[in-house]
Length: 248
Image (cartoon, rainbow, N blue to C red; front, top):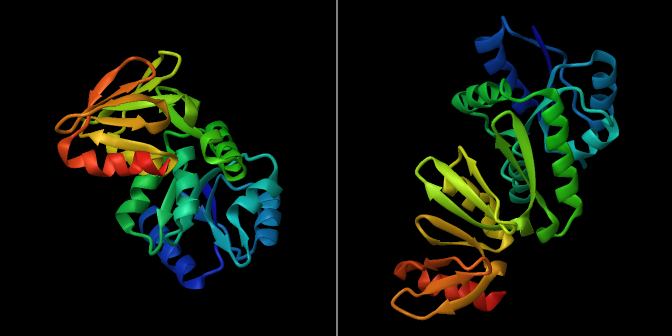
């Protein structure tokens, strides 16, 4: 039986999540009494030693990230719950840790719980460390967590030259010539990296704009990257691409 606790200051959100878990997972998840503050959450975690916490990003005037810092050692798994908060969601996505958008959807909950089975407590602690790092670092110093087989890879954003799509897989090309194949779509990386000055120049290629060596004019044109790779720029993306380059 998995011991779980909901840490959230919005009662209707607690009720929604409690109802879904009670209806679908009563035989596998034991819900402890919910708490609504960082202080109480830290205390209950230390006293009850839960296996899993559903952690709200914004808890009154504090955050779930504050709670993780105060807990110190993280020996439990985490699923974040949040209303749409672009900054927080980006930090969570960079870490590859699980999260749910409010109002919580039943199918999304099932997907998050299934993904959780593939994540060890040790990896959860590492993922939380990435969140803490990214919240305190400027854009180019942020780290990206990449699940690769049975391990987690932590890449500095500035190490990534480009990402290339192969249907449901993406190959990440690093500035040290290393290639990493990940079972994620290019769209997933585009959603995470666009705000970090990456641009999708073609259906198959997402590039780090800081790694462009030159641009060759043409109908769409092409870019030459610092590693010598030349890539076509889609005609329909050319105008937006040039505008993005001018803003850097």
